Length: 427
Image (cartoon, rainbow, N blue to C red; front, side, top):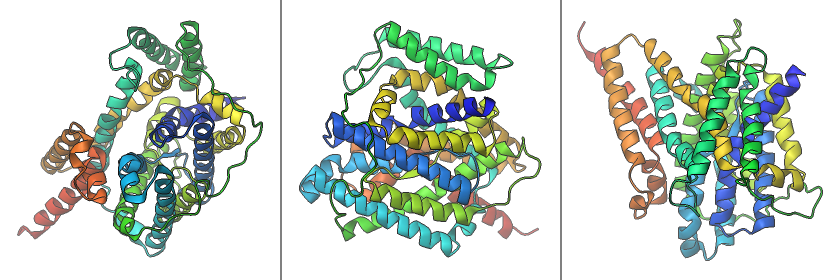
């Protein structure tokens, strides 16, 4: 029973963090109700399968695979630009299928030839701590907008949504303190929050679907359209995906090591290869390419569910949900505010993880310089309108408009620069 509840909580955690992106992308590309649900289905199928592949053959850690924010940025960028460049939204989606396939191939090649092993040594506690700070900073805006009820239809704070969101957050903290069910706080918070919103008429309608079972199809939008001018963008995004993957693995490794004395050996190369395979799956099934989500560390630290089995069962449940349109449509109706409020304590706790990383750094002077410059730059970029980068090449726009990526890469470069300058100083 304990394993079942832990698995169900993993599944709801994955759902809460994974539904927003495919729904947003479907809306951006004009997919109607049935097409949108099908797109969500395929994305969930890929995410569940990707999580299982990583847990069994890749890094072998309980790390959620979620829609990559970088790919979301590319989808958003080409929602309007793609019509001009490629002729229509459907043609743009064909090009993006090609982008996922190319990314997967590049990712596998880079992993096989050892790039992962060279990259991983740059993920020092300073870099990981800075990455966590920027991750929380970037997500905080989306969390608060969701809990304020701000969406495409509402531009002003919805008081009822905000108050109920606060109740769900308080409920989550209260449940966390209970001795028996405390580790299932996310599960109970989502269920209770959904019921609470439904009682006040704030739940979303379930999109009607006719199919009972629908297996994911290949190349739904047509055969991939090869556009070689996308190659630079894809290479750049792939490198950043690998960087994100390594950061997530490092963070979760630190948390899991507190529960298991015999730490599992590093499997960065295998994780990189599976990440490439997962991008291929995103292209084959006309979905969104997945990436390891660092929020898994916060989930594990909050719930103490650190074993692989519950995670693997949770990922299997996601696959099960994805082949039944009616079930997918039901879970897609979870109010955005409920999902954000239920996992709010999980992501807020990641600030503490960042501080713990910084505490292990011996050279505090270098830490202050690297973290200060990187966080200042990364957070600053988050306040720059995305449209400000529209005149730049796509690969550069996707990099400069993402504060998490820009700040993390800056932290790595500064860490290398300062460490080399110290080595050159005469002893």
